[in-house]
Length: 290
Ligand SMILES: C[S@@+](CC[C@H](N)C(=O)[O-])C[C@H]1O[C@@H](n2cnc3c(N)ncnc32)[C@H](O)[C@@H]1O
Image (cartoon, rainbow, N blue to C red; front, top):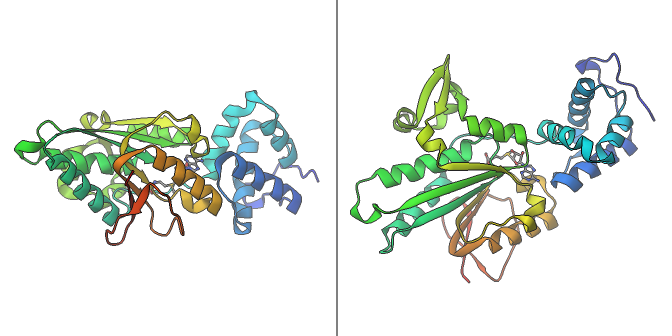
């Protein structure tokens, strides 16, 4: 059925039929892994119509055909994905997980051989998660301890959404976003750049490298031997078998002794011969044992 969207307003988005919903849902899941529940149909319609109006497409079917047709529409697909994915995030979103990372790094850096810790934030959205990790680790390194003088860290932060990554690189946040950052860290790691706008200081931004990576394409990702992989609030949108495939692939990129931190309840019944559960309160974390 071709329902024209010409002349509609956002309050008046045309309804898609079940067949169209099925097609769109399958396309989104196939390309991003994300499942759209039936309750999100209205959200899908509104998001599609917003983009269709911007690119001058008349109906859902025409837009769909263009998107699957070929390379020329890849840029449009990237823009649409940004509308359809949930990018909600905040600084120090799950405190227990950050406490675990702090303890883990402190222990590692206290070992005789000081070294660089490599960390990967998977599904980093607009940057709050990797910058929280960077603040936490920089704070640890600032503590005057002889044995961590030669320690370093590097953070790679990845996401499927190019607009989210661009905001992350810029590192500018509204004052309200900083509510979850301790005042001492706010003072140290942010500078005012406008009315109620704060930017992460360049010295901290330099520690985080942002890149576009789709977690469905992990086989093409060259990362190896990571010390920490932090992946929260991404897998919840995926089917069970896909979650397992992804955590299996992440495990292979972890070094022996490395730490995998997931969101609480995001993966159930997952076992892997190289992985052991890390018994840390109120977290879902694993360590690679071989
Ligand atoms: C809800 S946010 C979570 C952000 C952050 N990890 C946190 O816990 O606050 C989910 C992020 O996953 C990203 N995402 C969704 N599908 C993805 C995929 N297939 N590959 C990589 N990132 C994806 C979205 O763009 C979004 O930024």
